[in-house]
View 1 (cartoon, rainbow, N blue to C red):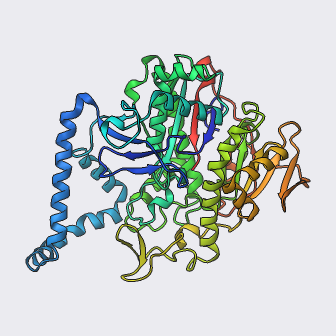
View 2 (view 1 turned 90 degrees about the vertical axis):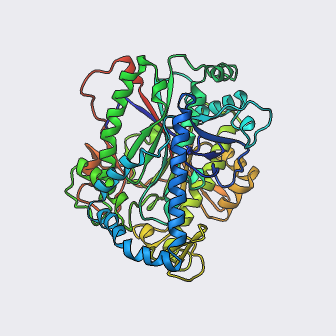
View 3 (view 1 turned 180 degrees about the vertical axis):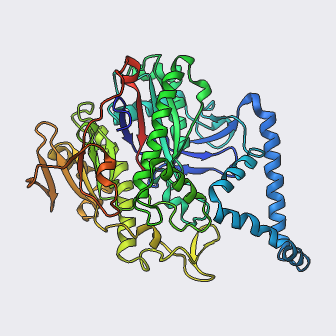
Length: 525
């Protein structure tokens, strides 16, 4: 709606970059890939070679601050330290009260202070010099051949194998909020509850490497020299967007990028506005800019138990060409996964690997919400308000309880418990064979943990998978409401809405060749 000249596509949010990742200010590596995948590769974020000295000084500051905080924490439990803590403890109430009364301003101040210890400009240790992957410096990263295979896989998955736009932005996603012991449940499911920004950044670096592109061309995809990839990160809690390695963007692409950035700024505000209608504390009459400020404030509010609803209300996964869902308002209830049958081979290898990730990840997210909704105290974890983090492995209720599994009451209160429906653009014969040949998919399908339907690519006929076979599905009502914009359809409504067709907006100005090719490729979860 914001930029009709743009094309969007989507893929599982780890972008086939399965890795153990260590940020520049992280103490250890963590996996960024689906839980069913065990990474073999290690990637570390490091200061730029020209900023190594400044990076080390900031690292020293972080270590000293960490040591000081640890000493205060330890000594506050001694006899003398307890008295000192009691005398100066009132000082700690100042930032606490500020985070409640003025969370957005407090966040901006804290962000400014953080520049003293935040790493300077960084790069990823992405290319491996040794033969075998490992965690030592010589073994970190990927070989050029491995990078080229990752690039080809994702481009095939999203059906982008020719007619490339000059700038393609890959968005990883995650969530950040101040007071949330369940924060990883809001992050990227395809990254094992981590944040997908590093995966998007790594993919963009791989795809921009001319040595990788030469190997990609040998594998059948010609990436023109003028095409540039940009990695980005979308914080789904406050709708903030960060871009990586913009200094590497050629000057010829910067004007186009500024246009894309401007569209994304407008999209952030509209996205925040659409999300805010589900928050009871957000007035329905907010403007998009006011809604953006509202979600930014929620993320930093120490008293906020509902920073975002994330995947609550999920009911549907589409796996097919973006064209047949473009312009369809789905009330934020669908995972949209790109797949073009025309790019796939007769054995469906591309579809198989898409479903090997999409069904466990999206089905798992759906079941997590399903069980936590039908029994929030048994399968879920009850209210998050009395939760305490226990040994950094889970949460418990109050001062003593078993570890609580599942999602909290505040995360599922607007969710409708139902088994998620996959609508896949393929034939019955191909999907039946994929189910039989893949144990993980077969167990999910035959156990009725997920529902399946197909759209035949040749004639658009719809069939549902029922008790081991496909049955024709007759659509009783072919008419959908048509509205001028999403906002016209949902404004003033807090409850679930039906589907609607959004009219294609007209551009204010004629598109030139660069504008007509602008594209953003985004992640699902």
